[in-house]
Amino acid sequence: MRGKIFLVLSAALAVGILIVLGYRDDGVKPYPSYKTSSMSGFRLTHKQRDKVKWELVAEKATFPEGNKTIILEDLTMKIYQERKFVLRGGSGIYNIQKKNLTVNKPIEIDIGGDKLTTNSLTWNGERGLITTEDSIFFKGKIFQIEGTGLTAKIKDQRIRILKDVKGIFYPVRESLSH
Image (tube, rainbow, N blue to C red; front, side, top):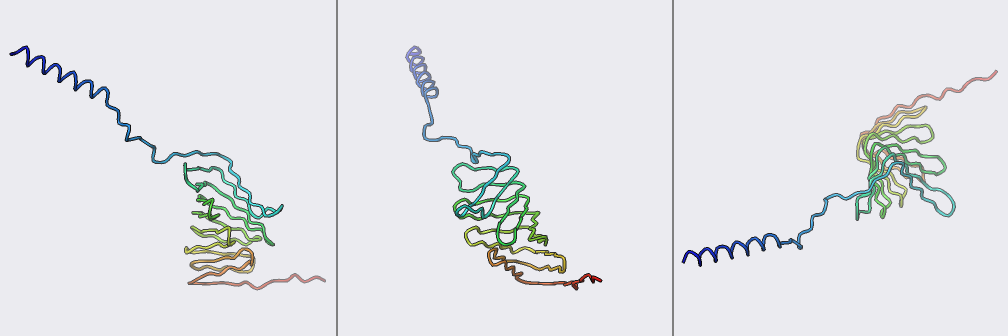
């Protein structure tokens, strides 16, 4: 009797060991939640015909797998119109399909020597439109303007501050020639 119980238990133990050793979980595959590639010295140029319309340069670019975005660090964007716009930002995300760039602080835009600063903005490449809902500070040679929210149409060279606008305009001093 003991021999039969021992034989049954041994057989059950052997089957159990074979099941454990032979078990493969083919249905569950571990994937990293954030596969990426990255590079230093990133440059993206957009041309229409043979003319460069804008350039996007970043110290570092990260490309999440399967994503249509590029994560950028320490970026500079140059937009070429009648006046050259140079936008510098701390970090940003460029959506390749929509041609949108979302930039985070610190942000400074140089518009022909005049400086506009804000904490975040979105640039829509298709529409040539810069927008933000954050506070802005815009300083030129003869003016200083601050407010909240902004829309800027690059092609038309129109900037509209949306609310709480305060401005100071300095008199233009012309030099007298004798």
